[in-house]
Amino acid sequence: MFGSKIKQLREELRLPQRVVASALELDTPMYSRIELGRRTAKRQQIPIIAKVLKYNETELAALWLADKIVAAIGEEKELAGKAFKVVEQKIKIVYDNSR
Image 1 (tube, rainbow, N blue to C red):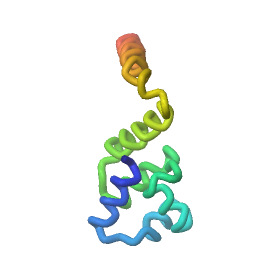
Image 2: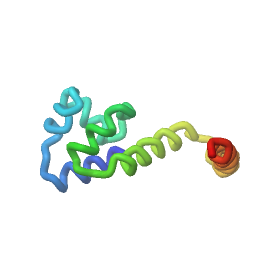
Image 3: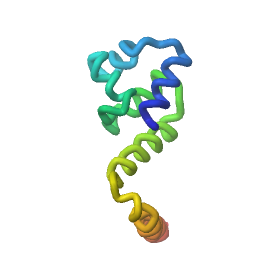
């Protein structure tokens, strides 16, 4: 999801991969692997990517996190729904306690 989105945004801006790679201080092949979903971007790279691609940082971060969640679920598809309910409850508890 994250890789596809940043590729789409980059192409809409007609930027070559090397421009984004340079901003991230990566070589172009390494950045290409991020777009292809073969490598995960680091969390601290998201603001840089968002700035270069002129896109909302929070939206990109949400896609990045969603990819990490999907990767963590892996083959446990039958348990995913149940796990999401547990996580939702935990987040609600943490949020309610932080008020």
